[in-house]
Image (cartoon, rainbow, N blue to C red; front, side, top):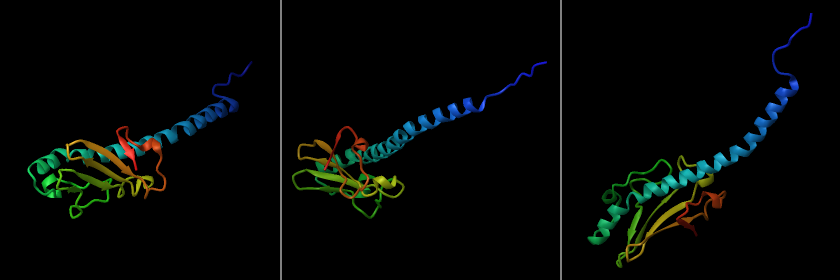
Length: 147
């Protein structure tokens, strides 16, 4: 009478565990980078939502304040209602900026995101990473330049 064993051998289980380990070492850093990039993109998107209100103020020659913009501080930034995010110049140029911090990933803390408007109404995105110790080029949104 022969015995039939059901199940996996120790070697088979070890091979499967090795494959899972290799896949994890490849995918976890990619996931981590995508999380950081998505936080930067989200903060840029939130800041971009104030462009229309900024334009109205500039065209009408009015001051730009947080209440005029309808600014609501993001959970990713260190901003508050009391800290002005927008500045206009007499020639119609200006900028809006926020600093990442608060609940953003610690590698992004201190990154300054700035949307600059020239006097013709063209907007550009600039990122100041001088205060961020762990910034990587992979986090940069496609349309933004790093200072």
